[in-house]
Amino acid sequence: MEAPRFSRNPIVGVLAAILLLGAPASAPAADGRALYRAAVEADDMVSYSGTLTSVVYEGDRAESTVARIEHKAPHSWRIWYLAPADAYGRMIVSNEQLTYQYEPGRNRVYSNDWNTTAPGIAEPVDISRVEKNYAVDIGPVASIAGRNALALSLVSKHRGTLAERLWLDSTTKLILRRENYRADGTIASKSGFDNIKITADFPRELFDLSVPAGMTLLHGTTYGKATRNISELISSLKFKFADPKYIPEGFSLVKGSIASPRGIDTLQLVYGDGLQTFSLFENGTGQMPSFDRATPKPIQIGSSAGQYADLDGQTLVSWNAGGINFTIVGNLPTKEVSKIGASIDQ
Image 1 (cartoon, helix red, strand yellow):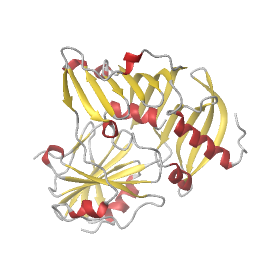
Image 2 (spheres, rainbow, N blue to C red):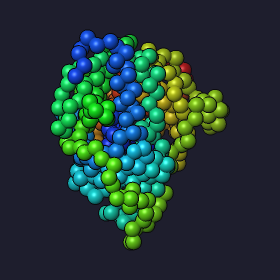
Image 3 (cartoon, rainbow, N blue to C red):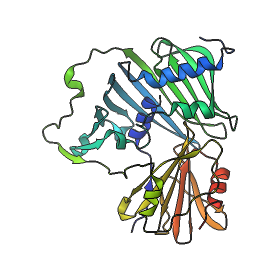
């Protein structure tokens, strides 16, 4: 039985960029919070067309994705991939209920529910949780894609570290550029519009969910249905659940799900602080996952020997204990992951 695999999907990267996407420095903090709220809500009110470049930093490498985006507020999307070469021609069309992913090279169209196209990405931002855990500081005005933009820095109230920096269009409050940072202060990813036009003038057929002649419609990847009823979820497991006793300050359990990738029943618990998340995966096979495009390094988790790697700006740590495989994926330093892992009762 093959173990679960963790690899990057360029669709997830671009969706994350667009959906999560001058005042004086001494302005009151409340102004920063109001601007952040306006930025979160902007995509439901602003229609536009533009080209977005996203870059993920991984060690001494950087991988970029370029996509043409048409968005008619509040819910219509068309995303056409221009780069890298293996993604060229791929297209996403969605009404935020149903998503069609067009793969011309395979003559296939994959149908997905919007919320499962990129799990955890297409969900509403918990603004109250962000405000509880992050200070929002206003920076200087800059020029992004030929438009004036205000800079916002979101700094953790618990760790004092910069987690995210946004540049908002001064007129529409749309996010024009976004940078995510690791816990050690290094940049994990960035995305920004190279050009953008604020417009609602689109041909109606641009957002049609249709299947071209010669292409086959198939159901896409199936993800476990997320729930906040964790007790009920755990009671359905066929293996003994083990939970962490330590969680980083500001984080709490958000939701959970059970899926069976490659026939392996796997529990996923998602913890978040409003901006950053990490996932704890457990399965009863005791099999380590595959580390795509990375050579894992050894790490000690309590009394267990494990492996870790940095993938797409996130840390992936996996170890076996008591016949259970544990895997943690998230924007956390390995020291913090080790502390979480060591606190798990087996």
